[in-house]
Length: 113
Image (cartoon, rainbow, N blue to C red; front, side, top):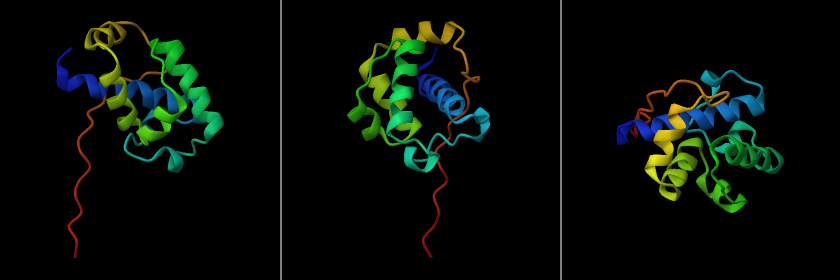
């Protein structure tokens, strides 16, 4: 997998996990929206930590999860934490609830008036 697609793939997988936990379709999850605005509290964060560990085999602490702030932030932290080859192998497996790798374009800048 090309480097530019790793973040998109992992963000998509994480968005799928969040969507499943919130009982929402994955396309309703904004990967740039803060966890608090998505409705992720400490109990749901703990559930998601367990899901990431079980589905991807990646351990992340509660402080790391909270520090990430967003799905994209969490994906970036996880990519820094693990070997790139692991993401390539995980992408080849079927990951339950993970949508296809979405494009994750940067958010548009709003000009100050």
